[in-house]
Length: 302
Image (cartoon, rainbow, N blue to C red):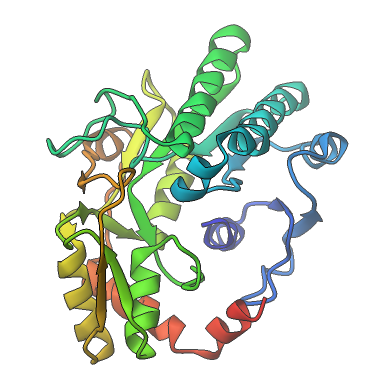
């Protein structure tokens, strides 16, 4: 997410500084982007990086749903505490707004009633969802007490180029890579679980809108795709995209995987003037083109 956002901001004329643990060895960042190597735990470095900064995008997170459950204390220490320190540092530095990437799939109660709006009950069943929601609440607190503005995006399932297909997150990249290179695909459950996948450029457009738009009373926005797609349907589209049949291994469904995640994005459409533009078929084709290129081999070598 971050690399695509940086590229978009840079092309659009923003002065961009990036605080990250790693530099991009693949698809290098634009030369005018300031690169600061470090993490949110380095308080002095963060404070120095924020000098003169108006907008802060908080995308840093060290866990996914599965890993957060294994060690919820580490999830708290590695993500919530550094995020609170970042919020405080933004306030001290005089930043105008923080744009935080939360989660549209884990902060809500598991439900089969879709689409899910921002006002749906929020009782996460994973540490990942709990910690994301906790940071949301701290942002709300800092605005009420100190006037620090914020916007929160709750994305469903973004995908696209630069997503590492060897990791355990990102069905689109994993499916494309494994089917395209003749490797077996694992499906947890019977393949009927649904998501509203959306392309990375659409997420980036939402992030920029959340930074630039004048906000009214709303600060939390769902963003996602325009159609509900099951894992089995996604795999079928992947097979069409790469021109090969998948070898599927089915495993028992996991307790933390929601049956349906389809978000109501009408608020983002109305307030941010945002809607997804890239169809799933087009997004799959673009992602497979990247996965088939030399760029992916440089990514996987890291």
